[in-house]
Image (cartoon, rainbow, N blue to C red; front, side, top):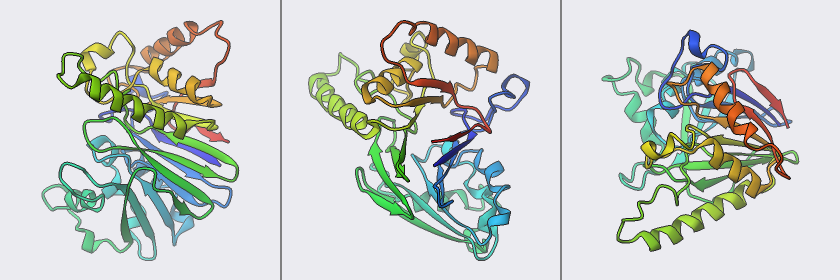
Amino acid sequence: MQVTFWGVRGSIASPGAATVRYGGNTTCIEVRTDANELLILDAGTGLYPLSRTLQAEYPLQAHLLISHAHWDHIQGLPFFEPNFVEGNRLHLYGPTDQASGKSIGHVLDVQLQHSYFPVLESQMKGRVESHSLTPAQNITIGSARITPYATCHPVTSFGYRIDADGKSLFFTGDHEPPESAIDPAHPQFKQMQAQARALEQQLIRGMSGVDLLIADSSYTEAEYPDKRGWGHGTFETSLRYAQAARVKTLAFTHHEPTRSDDQLEAVFNDVMRGRSGEGWQAQCLLAKEGMRLTL
């Protein structure tokens, strides 16, 4: 299995001199099985540069797994070049929003309204098929088995485990450790706390033993109190998950868009210095545009 990062910033694309080393595009990750089947995690602005590399594979069949429908995870979808070429097929997977009841297919329908985009879906020559998923519903795509897991975010959101060819990865999407997000003053705090712990244990089981954990690590512990409830994790919570699940490699991602590359590296180095001397550690790295990992 080969994993390539095309977008690693969170919340909003942030190109410029201060982000050129790690990249300014929002979340998009390419996964290739040993049989070269194409799986894509999220459709942030990184989807566009990925799509520019695919022309030699036409007619193309791509499988796009959407974690949730916030803008930074779907902005690249209308610009996915294979959709404009006859013979290509895009399979779009994701959750049905619990609040609205809208399926993942609704995401593309909204984006391609003339108010937001000049090309209608009916004018695209490629074929798009949408598939709504439910948590823990295993699906098979070629040689890969994909399992979605509910995560903690202000909207319905999935993380995904992918197993293929004896290798595995887990992508958290946007995720805030659920127990941390609960206000202790809430009248149903104890009940919500129990539910949060159950969700977290389910996620850790899903991550268990993976070769690669790609985790939302937007904030530092010092920054987190002002961001509580926004739906994002910290470097430290990602490390806690990695250790609990005994993963082999941890990639920190969804980098805070106001953080320069220099500041990002400083935070990373500070976090890793604080872990020196611990008995068990995963290999830890900062996700970076263009970085390719072979599992």
